[in-house]
Each structure stands twice: as C-alpha cells, then as structure tokens.
View: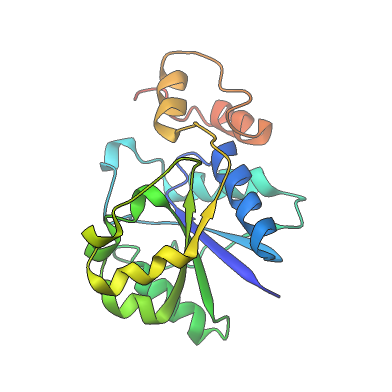
Length: 197
C-alpha cells in the first residue's frame, strides 16, 4: 500500500486539507493519506491559539470517519517535545512503515531548509510539494540540496480555506459550515472551541 503523510496542527482540520490531499493522492496513485496531528509544532502558532491536542486529534478523526482513503496517526501526540518531522519519519521507519512520502504545501517550501535536521531529512523522506495553480518559485533561491524537489511538485486545487479564518468566524459567532466537515463543526460547537480567539 502506497501511503502519503500529511502532518499539521489541524487547528481545526478543514476541507482545504482534505480536498487537496485527496487530489494529490489520486494524481500520484497513493492508496492512503495518513493525517498526523502535531503535538507541539516548532514553527508556528502561539499556545493561546492552539486547541488542546486531544481536541485536534478528535476533530481530525471525526473529519475522515468512514473515508477509506484517509486514516489518522497520533504518534506525534504520544511523544514529548517539539513535533519534528525528522523524528516522526524515524519513528515510522522503526515501526516498519517506511518509506515515508510526506506532503507539504508549496508555501512551506521556503522554510523547509530551516526545519530540524533539514538536509538529513531529505534522505529520510520523499517530499511531495502541493502547489496551487499559478504558483511559482525561483528554485535557485533554495540551497542546492533542496532544488531536487522541483521534480516533486504536484498541482492541487485552489481551495482558499484557512484554519485562522475558521477560528475567527467561530469567535465572532459566524457559521463555519461548508468550510470544514459537519462532524468538525459539531465538535467545535459541542466543546466550545475557539470562542475566545
């Protein structure tokens, strides 16, 4: 079974994550998309804006319940310390679940050289770069080791949904239906998440 990993805070997970990752998986012939919620993302979000990991895991599971293409792995939530992709990849290999194909948005590509053990990571993980139509990059602006990723770019639908906007709408008492699965809308409401953004 060919598997594609999509990590993230999923704060909350939304249709952009699901539609785009499904599109890439179908384009490249992956059998499974594994969603990996980050426990402590080292590169973004202040603690006050980040829902408890148990809530983010529950929302991610609710979003893909009954969907054969998707599953959820909580391995980063079971670890302590920052959620480094390098450590996650090693853990997957240790569990006998390699090779690791990891999906990232094109917007993350410029930051990738600054990730923990980034150059080593390139030999541990095959990165798939998910780009919106019209996206471009001056590949020479990346360190030489990362320029090989130009051949790993895959076009994905342009779905302009952001978790930040969903949290803001919740805090303003506005509906979020159609931005995230109904099961996630229900979970957010029932658990009073994001009310005080």
